[in-house]
Every structure is written in structure tokens, then in C-alpha cells.
Amino acid sequence: MNPSSERICRPVRPFGEMLPWLLVAAVVLATGGLPFFWDTLQLASRHAHFFYENRFESLFLPNDMDSGHIPAFGMYVAMAWQLLGRSLWVSHLAMFPFVAGTLWFTRRIAGRLFPREQAWLVTLLMVADATLLAQFSLVSPDIWIACFFTMALWAFLEQKRKTMAVAFLFLALTSMRGMMIVAAFFLTEAILLFFPEKRRQDPFLRPDDPSMRPQDPSLQPQDSFLRPQDRSNPQGPSFPEGRSFLRQGLSILFRALPVYLPAALPVLLYLGAHFLRTGWVGYHPDMPWAEHFARVDLTGFLRNLLIFTWRLADQGRLFIWITGAALLLRALRSRPGTTPDGRLLITLTLVLAAVFSYSALTYRNLAGHRYLLPLFLMAALTVSYHLFLFVANKHRVVLVLLFLLAGELSGHFWVYPDSIAKGWDASLAYLPYQPLRRDMVRFLQEKDVPPETVGTSFPNNISFKYIDLSDDTRSFGTAGEQGTPFRYLLWSNVFNDFPEALKAEAEAEWKVVRELRCVQVRMILYEKPVSAGAH
Image 1: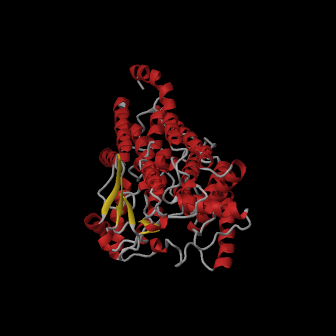
Image 2 (image 1 turned 120 degrees about the vertical axis):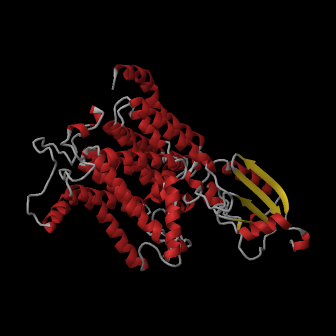
Image 3 (image 1 turned 90 degrees about the horizontal axis):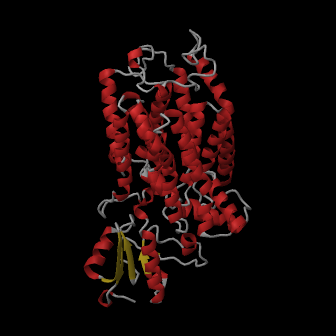
């Protein structure tokens, strides 16, 4: 970095270091008392209520709320309630250590990979991801995923094997997706060890050519499991010539056992006991959400491919992928070399994409934004790393990063027409829904309208007990496709499952009793006219 660049960065850095923390603190404080929303109604509230009300008498959930994985997150929330009281504020407070952990490890990763003066900007870019900020506003198991994923990645880079084992254990305890992430780390490590960087025919790996080394000295290779403590072996670990593929595989497996076995054992024990108790693993046909696990045909596969691609580019991430494509074209033209760290980032990103794409493409509805959160973080990290690696002008790099940051922040305003189902739990665009719902519920209470006479849709058709942590076990009804027994219909563009035909009928024939709007969220209460057979 030249002296003029240093003079510019020095005054910015102290304030810049605070920006990621200030951004996340603003989100957490502003949303600390919000009700449960979207999938957290199931994975946090209902699970926690079961353990809280039954005093942890069983580790196994009832079939109607059993998600098939170890319900450790629900247990944790229930323990927080037992210690501090059952409330929305306590629920959100219980997330704080893991929100802080995500920021802490993200900053450590950035400090490990990037020039000191710009590491804060990369940290800000990563935590500004729309889906990550949305999860920070919720009582969400994906906060655990984010925390332990970044912890695992930092430990993976630094080869802190004990820390890796702890991170993998908690990932595996969080969900099936956490188990998939652990598998992705294992596959990445195996690939990097099977195919060491000394293979000079790889166009991205030419460390022997001085003209192809990184532009920034701070991005020169550092010690990792690719370049271990033994500095006499600059090429990293390799296998003796002639060693069989099987022996290499066994060597990698034995090396991995101390790190991955602590995560695998409790999962295998729980799933085995779960199978003996229930007769199923993963999912079963009687699940309320079983249709999401239905296998798709070729048409469904192609549809899922479009959705998967859309998820990757949605909410401002389009600009990250465009930047990545530009860097790839540059790499193909000039054949610059990457570093061992760069190779690790690329490999892990591709492996995560492969692992997540299997479930996203072959099942009916397993391509939600939050399912891909680690892939989003890796894409931002990998593209940022190679920006610094391939572009000598650091002022230009900073401008590109600021542009990408603006793109990510714009993602909170990417809302599509009502006919397109949206991931409302994947950006802060959902926030106005909470005060609108509160206002509408208060209005119905003032008018003495019984909740069971109001038809609505997910996530508003769940018991008030689970949404608001109140003692009211009632709930609104669920609007169906064919006709409706309800006197009122409560619609919002947040409700992806609200029947379109019923919405069209309400617009044409029903009376609008109350309509609320805030930013991009709308909510309308309809009343059935007397001529249509109202009660």
C-alpha cells in the first residue's frame, strides 16, 4: 500500500472497526421485543414450549412438531426461559452471544485474509448480507449456524483443530443443514489434501512464477494446514509417490477422526434412538411440512434450478456474482496465481454450492434463502479476497467493495409482485409486518371479533401463544382454496400461502373493513357481505 493510501485509511479505520458492530447492534436493539416469525415459530417457539412445559422429560418431540434433527436449539431457548422468564425479550437476549460470536469470528477471518486497513470493510460487507441481518432480528437457529460456521472457518484457516471440533459439534447439534456444513468442511479438506497445490498445470495455481504472485504482500500465503508449521515443507502436506488412492483416503480419514468424530457421534446416537422410537429419520409423510420434502420430476428440477439461481442473486448478491464473474474472466485471460488461502476459499465455496444444491434441486421446497446463508457468506468472502489479490489499485478495490455493500443493503428493498412467493424471513423488509399485525389484532379485539371467525395464512395462523408468548392459546383460522366458513379474511402480501383465488374473490365481492400499509408491507381485513351468507 502506498503512503498516500495509508494516510487516507488511518483516520477511517477506528470508526470503520466500529461500523459492523454498530450496524448489528442497531438491528438487534430495534427488534429485541418482536414476536416470533416464519420458521422460528416451529424451530424456536414450539420446540422451546414443549421442553419448557414438560421440564425436559423427553429429548424427543411429538410427531407434529418433530423436524427430524436434534432439537438442541429449542432446548437452549427453553433453558433461557427457565432461568430468566418466558418472554420475547429473554428469547432475543439468548441470541446475543451468538450474534456477537458471528461478528467476532468474521472479523478474525477478515483480519487473517485481508490488509489490516481494509479488513473492517470486508467484515461490514459480510455482516450486511440481507439474510444474515434478518436472522439477527429473529430468535433463529440460523444465528447458531452463522456463529459456528464462521468459528469453523476461522479455525479451519488457522488449523486450530480443537476449535474446529467444537464448532462442528454445535453445527451438527443445530440442524440437518449444520450436519451438511460439517460434511462440506470434511470434503474440502479431503480435496485439498488429495490434490495439493504443487500441481502446476492448474491455471489458478502458479506460485512458482513471480509475476503471478499476489499484488498485496499482506496476502502472501500464511501458515495453515496447506502450509503447516513445518516451514521446511513449503508445498504443504503431500503423500509419498506411489501411495495408493485407498491409503491416501485412509490417511485423511484417520487425520480427520479427532476433529469430526465428536460431531458425528451424538448425531448418530440421536438419529439411531430416534429411529428406534419413531421408525423414521429425517422426515415422514405425516409431517405438516412433508410436501416440502417431496421429490421432483425433471420439470420440477428445472424449476428448482431457476429458483436456486434466483436465491443466489437475490437481495443485492447479484453484484457480488457479477464481480466474481469479472474476476474469473480476468483469471482466464492473464492466468494469475492464487494463494493457499484463496484455493481453500474457492474449494469450500464450490463444495458448499454442491452440497446445498442437492437438496435445493431435488426436493420440492428446500431452497429458502436462509438455507444458503453459509454459501452467501463464502461468496462475499471469496470474491473480496480475489479482488485484493488481482487488483493492484487498492482505491479501486475499496470503491468496488463499497458498491457491493450498497448492493447488499439495497437487498432489503427487493420485494416482488404479490403473485411471487418471497423469502420474508431473509431480509429486513418484513419488519413493518410486525406493527401492522399488532395494530390489526388490537382492532379486532376492540371490535370483539373472535379469532376463529377470521381466516388468514402462515405465519399468522399460529396460536398467539407461540407468536407473542402470551397465555392466549387461540389462533386465527386457516383460509382454504375452496370457499370459506369465515366471516372475515385477513390478507397480507407477507402471506405466501394465501389462496390466490380467495384473494381475488375478496377483492371483487367482500367489503374492505380496514387497510394498513407501511413501506412495502400491506395488510387488509375483508368482511363477507350479508348477501354472500355471512354469519
